Image (cartoon, rainbow, N blue to C red):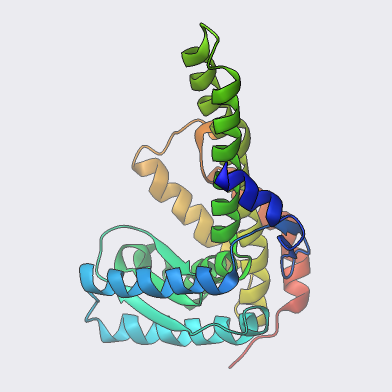
Length: 255
């Protein structure tokens, strides 16, 4: 009930506009709280995961990161940018609220060069700029509050366990996972524009996601599309091709 009240109380102040795409999002989590969580989690990461000693990789990540931050900065003016390379075989990267960016060494063979790295960093920074984390928490709060209501309504029914299980599965398949896929697509769109404005050729994003698709297939990444948190690699490439002309119009090469 408390969660439900919090959501209703936030209806008047929880609607914000996502930079670049202009989408209206519902997010009742204060930006300052999001950022504080990001800072705290990043410090924890630096204590728990080894930081790479590869000077060349660290310099490249810092260089690309600063260029992405330069163009994304106006959309996240309170960011405290930090770029860290973590020693891990995992092919992954992230940007926490507040501009804390982590790159795992396992993704660098797939990015190959600065343009490939800019694809990844633009995408991850876009998640933070669009405040997808707070939006996801808000949605989870709403589903939890609704689930409590469903449970109360069904408590006298002999099918209450079946109703509860159906609600749990339905909320994931029909709400949580589609929302996750849509925010990933939005981060692709924003990130593509960021990398172009930072002086990296946006068509390099196509090459990166094709290589990443090859990487996933080599490791048996065949999850059914409706169970995915991300778009399929093929969907991603097709969507980026559609968005490419707009990004290319923003591209200005840098020395």
